[in-house]
Image (cartoon, rainbow, N blue to C red; front, side, top):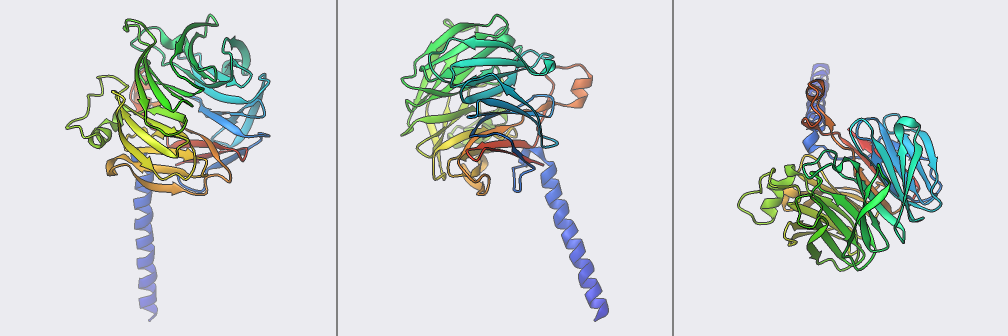
Length: 384
């Protein structure tokens, strides 16, 4: 009996080790990694709703903006608050890191109708304030540095309650173009990975695709209006090339568009009608993802291409498998204690070999790192 019990115990240890090894293998594969509970860190310091998040593209910094009118900078590895940025007089609604390589800036936008630029290399000094919108500025994003469409490294795009989008020259500090078309508050804006297009989402229940490339006959042309949601659209995202194969299959295409054809082939939008819609470049909705029980507040494509992640006022984070007809395969029901307001996936980092070779646009390595913000005033990070 003693030998049998010893053998049983040893077999159990082997089984557990094998199971752990398989789980560890899955966890090491960035393309299949999905956030899981518990979160790595709970970042607590804001005195009101957290509205927005942005990861520094190189360092372990995470910026958060809040209804308390501040931007806070966190070290997401240590889970510690680094500094608090004060300057806005009303709620901070959007934040983003970007700019020329080697001189990354942080942009923030606010209900006070302004955009502020902060320099991380100079203790986050407020180096410029951009004024021009006539209403709250709800989102701000840097355009891709060195894109094929021209010197976009100095451009910033903003979305506002004044129903417009504005393109800003951040070096000169002035608006270079105003895009008009939405009939209501523009809630979100997202640049395409190649910097040639913009995707905007509004309270007018539409999303719009814009051509801002230098090659366009009239840079800032509205290409497509996507209508189909039954309530305002709160968030939007361009699909990465890695997802084209899965999305092409969902859209009924025989083969996916080539990754080099452009970076505006497929898009996703999340709405107050509780659904997420997937669109092609013609503005055709080919899939509606149903599952959230309240307003959808954030969507992001997995960099590996196989999944789409979303958060909503139902307090959940959901993972949708694009290889399984968009089926919801994972729900973090305990992601936050209150409505979830924002979701960001950390940008990829250039692989060490490319970096050592001096390549600025080498192959990116996926970072298994996601952050969410909430009405509960807390930022949560999920990491491998």
